[in-house]
Length: 222
Image 1 (spheres, rainbow, N blue to C red):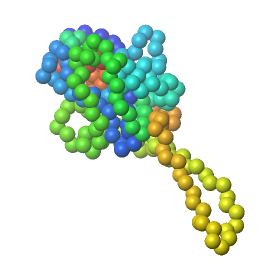
Image 2 (image 1 turned 90 degrees about the horizontal axis):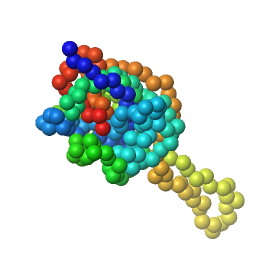
Image 3 (image 1 turned 120 degrees about the vertical axis):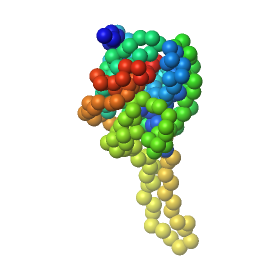
Image 4 (image 1 turned 135 degrees about the vertical axis):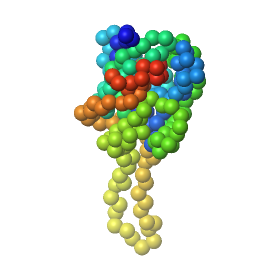
C-alpha cells in the first residue's frame, strides 16, 4: 500500500486583461520526462492560512505582492494525490482568482526546488489551453477558469467625470469629456462562496486528482 504524506497548499489563478492565465512549465525531478504546466502557488507553512500562503507564494514566484485580504475567498478546493521527487503526497489545496491588467513576471524568489524543476512560464489563453495536447494541472483547468471568470467579471475602468460646462455661446469650442486610462494596479475578484469540485489531476502545486487518481501521474510541491 502506498503511504501518502499529507500536505496543504494554496494556488493562484493569475489572469491578465486579455483573459490569459499564467502557468509555469515544470517537471518532476524524479521523472524528468514527466513535464507539465501548473499555476503559481505551493505548500502552506505550519499555521499559515490559505490566503496568506497564496499571497506569499505569489510574491515569491511572480514578484506580485498583495495583502491576503485582497485575494478574496477561494474559487475552488480539491484534494489530490500525486508523486513528486520520489515522495507520494495527498494534498488539500485551494485556488484563488487574481486579475491584473498586465504583469512582468519576476521569478527571483524561486527556492532551490523551483529553480531545479521549473523551466519557464507563459500566459495561456483559455481556449488554447483547452485545445493543447500538452499536460497541465489540474486537468479541469480550462473549465475552472471559465466558471471563475464568469462568476467574477473584471471591474470596469474608472472614468473621470467632467464638471458641467456653462451654457455654450456662439464661437465657443464644444466641451470634451476625457476618460482616465485603466489603472495598472491589479483587480481582485470580490469574495464569493468557494465551491468544491473533484479534479482528475493535480500536483503539490496542482497535482493529479483525488482518491481515484493514478498515483504515477505528476505533480510538484513548488
